Image (cartoon, rainbow, N blue to C red; front, side, top):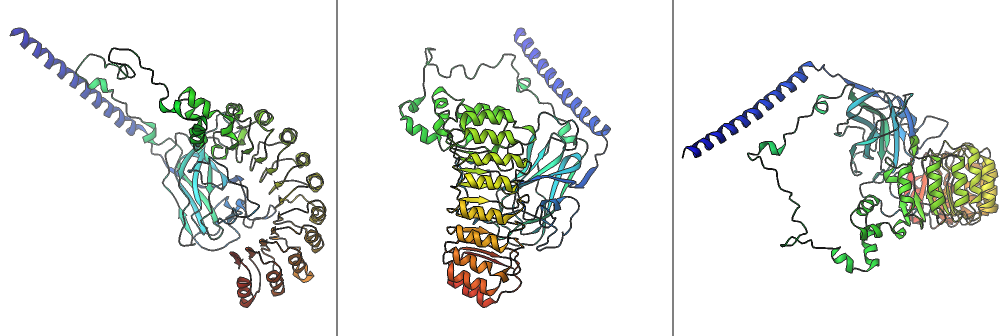
Length: 584
């Protein structure tokens, strides 16, 4: 009896001792926390507007002016809180869904993650790195296009950039349709960062909008010093400290996969071993690329299926632009021996991809490529295009949109890709000599985009060459070409009679008084899309000829026409199968 009482007394003392130790520990933690708060200085919030526009995917304006360009986002607001269409705002090139429905639009890539909605982006640099507390975007017309806001660990003004550049998502959401086009201050709730930043990226999707979205300014609010809540972390209390037993926990997985007598049971791959190879391939084909890579780590059977080259006939790496590197391409290289369509748009910037890594991948996997998307890839150089021209003989589609840092001489290598059918050179520095060389050798061209190519000296010469060498052309984008005249347009209409899409927006040298538009529509009966944006000279006789000669017309843009009678608009609407008409 005395022995039992002694043991009971000992256990009580031990429990009291343990609870006292934990209570003292918690008290000391509170004391340390309060001491930290007492000694930390007050952290003042900094408010700053964008200092510089570093990069963007597209804009409505010209390369030689400030109207409707992304450069308007630098500095304080010019328009807000006013609403409406103002030239002092930043406007992207496209909106709505009908751009993707045109014949010139590329086919969508499989395995694009459902969470990836971005179509355009802009990157902004601010004066001082801060820990963000808020990002405010001043939208002045047709808001609702913003789908993601990101922050970068790189200081763009630093002389010693880090080797490891990190991008973190501050906020992301699906595209929304705002009922009113009025101005608003968009300030979503953002997550807290573990690093200071002065480089913000805003990504947009304008597919639900009925008109161009217009942005006026971006405000970055934050603290110079790391916020208290992220600086101080509460110590974790181990679950074992709360146990009254001194014995260690047994291994909860010790009995997994064992029979009652302790012998191991080989479960294999279950019913997957009995499925046909083709059926497993079909199941795996519905996974996104990231899920496919994770599944390779589960078992040998699924590793074999996930690494099968047939799973990588199409590969879109654009959704993973923030994490893609030479190492990533190296891991994928062995699986992409049958690759036919590759999307590297937005990737590789700020040293993430190098000439060595890109060239190695293209040399190993480019033999069967028919489509290559390289929009906004600023790592590209002349040797990169040379490698493409030498190793991708079957290439039919090439997109170099907004690769504005490529040297003009680099584009001469494109002429070696004689099977090209679709070529996008929007906002590049291609010159007239290289363009003529391409048209001389690439006679199978069906779709050509030369929008905002300001380095071409004489578009009449280019139009004449198109009429001679590209008779099968279906779409042509000459957005903001500076010097196309009625002579070049007449030769183009005479030689490219199969044209279905023609963009002559902001081609100010074309005058209706010369009869060029009437001659154009008489020779192009297959026209489905015609842009005459901001041409102040378009008149009622042009619209009459359009209605009489282009019965298949669906998209017409005559924004900026000074005067057009309502009767002609009604006549145009009922005469054609038009689904989109834009008049202002």
